[in-house]
Length: 230
Image 1 (cartoon, rainbow, N blue to C red):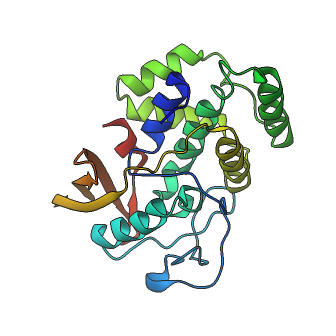
Image 2 (cartoon, rainbow, N blue to C red):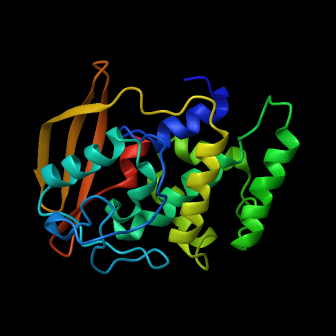
C-alpha cells in the first residue's frame, strides 16, 4: 500500500478483517440469504442511525458474508454486520482515519476542507470535546476497548451513523493512493465459542493471520469492533 503511514496505520486497524475500498457505501438492496442482506440486501432492525441488520446464524456465516464483501472491496456495505451497540465505534474509526487524509500531498488543504465540509454536513466535531487525538490513539494502541467504544458512542450520539459512514467511505475511497484489499481473506480457523462470544483467526492470501471476534446479540451473530483492537 502507498498511503501515508499514519493513515495506513488507522485504516489497517479499521480494515483488520480484510476490508477493502469499494463502491456502494452503506446502501441496501433486495433481501439476502440468512436475513443479513446478502449482497447489499435489506436486513432486519438494528441500531446506528437507521442501519438495519439481523445478524447471522453462526460466526461461520458471519465470516463468509464479510469475506465476500471484503474480497470484492465492498467494506462500505458492512456496517450492518457489526455488533449493533458497536457501530459508532466503527464509524469513529473511519472518522479518525479520515483526519489523516491528504497529509504530504500538494492539495492537502483542499482535502482537509472536503473532510471539514462532510463533518459540517453531519454536524460532527473534529474530535471529542476534552479528548485529544493522541489520547484517542492511546486508547486504541492500549486496546482499551471500553473507553474507545464509550468515547465513540458519546461523540456520535446525535449522528446518523449510516449516512455519515456512507460519506466517509466515499471520502476515503477518493483520497486513498492505493486502496487496501490486495491481501484477501481466505479462511477462518481455530474458532472458539463461549456462550455469546467467539474468537477465531482469519488467514489471508499472504499467510498473515488476524484475530476476528464475534458477538451474539438476541440470538444472532455479528462482527465485533473489538477485532480491530486485538
